[in-house]
Image (cartoon, rainbow, N blue to C red):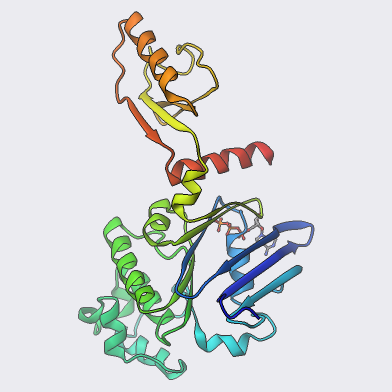
Length: 306
Ligand SMILES: Nc1ncnc2c1ncn2[C@@H]1O[C@H](COP(=O)(O)OP(=O)(O)OP(=O)(O)O)[C@@H](O)[C@H]1O
């Protein structure tokens, strides 16, 4: 056992019958780290989480969580991990405080009701019936219950899906506080901003494999391309633009994007072409690849391979 790793995954493979959901992946999570699993729909994130949470037996490979096999030794790690359920266990007639009190009965080492609600700013909703909470408040209650036993390791599968931007940010701040207090966090998310805000490292999956891995800065440093974007219209679009050397031209959502490793000559060509045609380029922008761009590239490459 490697005491340095809270999670260790080596050559993990999971098949559902003939379908390979996870095709031999490996990564570690160290104490106090936040790691975000990213990937397109069907990339294998939830399957990986299910294995780590001890719900699913790997087809092959090895996995340890807090030094134990999560499938065969689940009872040993269960008191030290938190898993966020998706509203499944709530009774709409119980108040928020009654719900937390009920969960405390079978949670070892549980925080007090007051402390738990204070942590996620739900104190003023303590007497509200769960059935009357907003979607965001329910999600916060889900979170409260997942950390009630003050876990060393928390698993969150898309913790802020469906939340408005303000509630999402509140959830991030709350998670940050928990991590600052020493908790380790593994989450899946479809929001790149969430990964950028929370994660020390990101693992990007596609079709069951890891295609990028590292801190956000490391992942971005591997991307050498620059994006030149301009608003598309009848005169400026992928069909009217002149050819650019070593440049990929994409058109989507009302924008034309030129992806190139050498932006200066491409930009010069673009501006000369616009001047020669007396065109005004609207929304002209030049920027380095963002995490969102990397993600979209991975998704596009995956689609062509599939
Ligand atoms: N119980 C199952 N039986 C058969 N195939 C499954 C099962 N669960 C998942 N799959 C398939 O395995 C692949 C990986 O699914 P998984 O749910 O792990 O992906 P994901 O990255 O979590 O996707 P999403 O972002 O949509 O939640 C998908 O092709 C999915 O259809």
